Length: 348
Image (tube, rainbow, N blue to C red; front, side):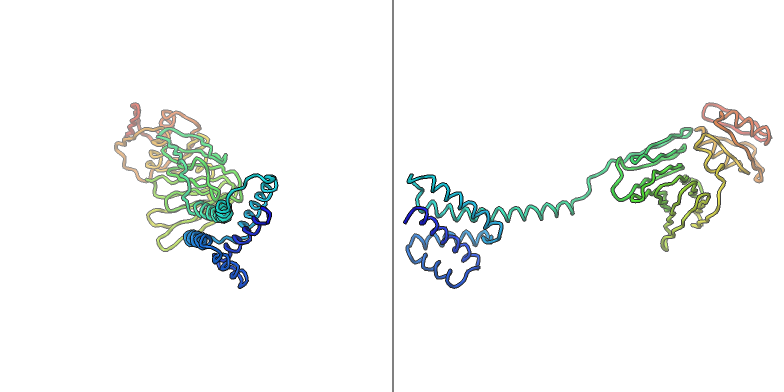
């Protein structure tokens, strides 16, 4: 028998042996295996060796991919045998072990590939998101700023206000957190909602311009829409309420009573601040002091104040504090003194 024919016979035996161990064998093939085992004690010993290897690995030798790999290996062996032209060949024992191990290796390779694939997918789906850097911008009293968000949207941040946002927005939403007051000019993106969170209120837009006023010490939160369309979501203890705004409409949410009222708003009064203009309309003294303290970064002391019905209307375009106080004092009859960051107002 030629070397090639002998090798093919041995290949057939080991192919059937692989099926036998995997439990995928017919009666005729089973007889071939038993006859091969009975041929010699060496065959019986090899069978026990391969059986033990199978029991430890539990790999199915006969999947379609592993069989293909195995056949390619055998073809290479045939080519090498033909090229040898009578040269010395490896011993039967080495060839048998190589053939069997090659088949096991092919199956292990397939199994390892499948295991790696599913475990990699599992890790990717279960692994936590990589932490994204959060950027915080804060303006002290007397300071205002214009900020560009990661998507190119613009924010005018008022004094004593803070905004927080991720260095890069997620693929699901654009979310910022605001304390204080800001005017937003949001770049339109129908697939990526823009959300401003302010305490119990969330304002969601796709592309629009609007103002949010939510100072911690103020009694109310205002959301005013200049253009586009927004959804304001209020989180009550009993549940959530959604209110949709049209241009020119605003929400006034009273923190104490937890009541939200939708109404039209005065755009000059509520939005002029971003252009450096202070607007007062029937403003009481405590409102004026609050605005001027924030605007100019000063502290006020009021002496001899008794008139609760006092109110003032006027506007100031990028004016100095002294000019503002001088104008108000002329009509409301009080004196004032500015000492660096401290201002004293005295009524006669």
